[in-house]
Amino acid sequence: MGFGTVSRGGSSRWPDQRLCTVEMGPPCHTSCLSRRKSSSSPKIKVDLDSSTGIAVMKFQSPPVNSLSLDFLTEFCISLEKLEMDRSCRGVVVTSALPKIFSAGLDIMEMYGKSPERCGEFWKAVQEMWLKLYGSNMVTIAAINGSSPAGGCLMALTCDYRIMAENPRYGIGLNETQLGIVAPFWFKDTMVNTVGHRTTELALELGLLYSAPDALRLAWWTSWCRRTRC
Ligand SMILES: CCCCCCCC/C=C\CC(=O)SCCNC(=O)CCNC(=O)[C@H](O)C(C)(C)COP(=O)(O)OP(=O)(O)OC[C@H]1O[C@@H](n2cnc3c(N)ncnc32)[C@H](O)[C@@H]1OP(=O)(O)O
Image 1 (tube, rainbow, N blue to C red):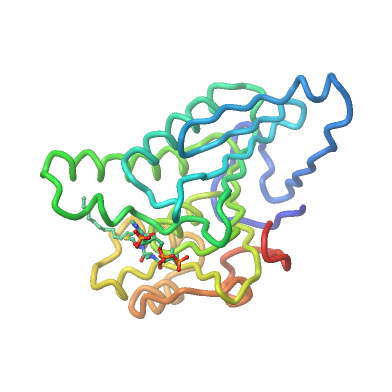
Image 2: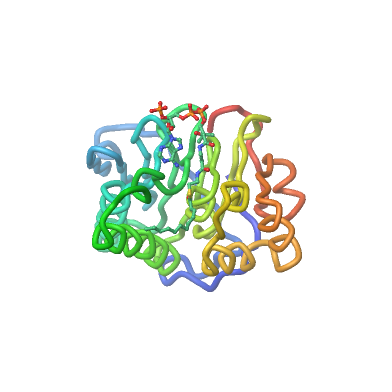
């Protein structure tokens, strides 16, 4: 897979992001296999191939990988563990569920909860964003399903995005469609990727884009024609 230019700053483990290529070699023999490390929490599975330095983080929280407090906590712990592993240079975040990357923030976390719990939840959302945006690993979102609102934020926070082409998959900050306002830092993250004008229109109308439409608007440099990555 080849990846093109991005606007974010460099990564200490992969200095020239603009020309980086990720190559996954076949797991050929025993010594290769022994370099694979797996860990699994209830909602997230991580496989790290120390010989390539690439980790794959798969979301496995049915029905829709919504970003609950538990999910966000597991996500941050998994990312921290990879950060501490010097053999890991890059991480691919993707979904183990068919058709859904992530449905965004868990609506049930925002309804009928105590102020303390809401505070804890909102802090976890911010932590996820800070850790992912500030990661010194190369981060790639392999978006193999729908990715509205907070799911889109997570994808936008990565260095690179690749999305499976399927007319049923949409990505965008659609909060306006839900009658809520996307927080300013959600908006800023999108501005950093696609610019002010596109973001303004997208947020005003709460648009969800297909992979080819998003490509045209410079959300990413490639998309995948298979329905599942
Ligand atoms: C502390 C307070 C802070 C407040 C600040 C808020 C500011 C931030 C604002 C927004 C950020 C967000 O991320 S809000 C969430 C936005 N998400 C969406 O709008 C997605 C809604 N979901 C969908 O569009 C669809 O479900 C889907 C395309 C993701 C999947 O469609 P599909 O047809 O495959 O599945 P279903 O629709 O039948 O759903 C299955 C199942 O999942 C439940 N579900 C869906 N989305 C969520 C969600 N975000 N949180 C929790 N649960 C969700 C849905 O209700 C179904 O449940 P049941 O089977 O029990 O009915």
